[in-house]
Length: 393
Image 1 (cartoon, rainbow, N blue to C red):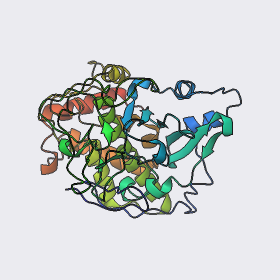
Image 2 (cartoon, one colour; image 1 turned 135 degrees about the horizontal axis):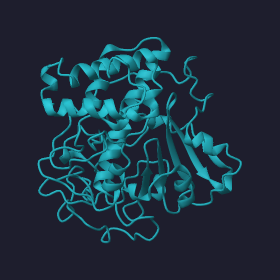
Image 3 (cartoon, rainbow, N blue to C red; image 1 turned 90 degrees about the horizontal axis):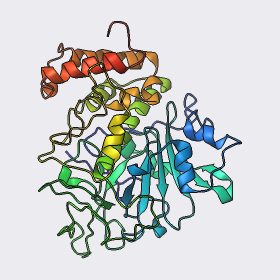
Image 4 (tube, one colour; image 1 turned 180 degrees about the vertical axis):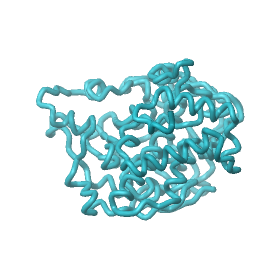
């Protein structure tokens, strides 16, 4: 079920398929979000006196972000909205912890990093204006129902007009649980996905019918040449597999931050732990009804990073036939955010996961996981996850 909320002054952003979460105060004495920048790739780079960064390419190299992750969003859903349009979209690049947003002709480069303890920390980067500057206004949109009440990243799907301005309030937050047909309004997407339809590459030209997107001829596009000049961008595409991966990752990070902050603030909600396990196991994943294929090297490069178990399997292996990943456990289990969870919380997650993948928990909601799925997940984690409890092994 899709649930809609207007988030502060932002462009009609809503929460989808998740329980509404009240925001945890950033000034809570156990959190001190603005006083503590955390320890993460961006904070370390910002304080590196030897770092010489004068371009987008140099920034991505310093942060170890592959340009093949490029996804293009043309809706005006950024603080750089006046510079964004269908002809001049914002480019997003990402790795497991960091996302970078670049608008040709913009005032600076947006940088967001998932700090293991502090959640997502936001910066702008401009080498001519002092380098990295931490942002506070970002939380107007990036802490609320869309992010489980903690500072976080999210992917939105809107109904944009011909200038990229979103209409009304009927936007949604998307992740792996979102129906294919509701995804990527305001985004460019290159892919082969058969007869499945999405909202990408389209605008609603008639204000009287703001949800009537002109999608004719805008599906299964190998190129974006009809929409924009690719010259200002590092890549000429906006890859569907990269975007789907980023969708999953953004909310996975938010779940981990939520549990971390709840624990430090004094109380971890049982329902939130259960919801995190469900998300990690892709329990409510919207199925693919036809295979899909990206247009960039992203799929191969992402999977090649491993780690792999003794049978050569990895949680980063894609399926792309009926679901996103071949093995239904999030690679987020390897993330610094997971490892930084308080010991009791992390132990609880391990126990709940093990109950499922060992076959002891046969609850109806886990029925989609076959015995083969469960065994594969258990074996991959046993071989590849450092710091497992002794009882798991």
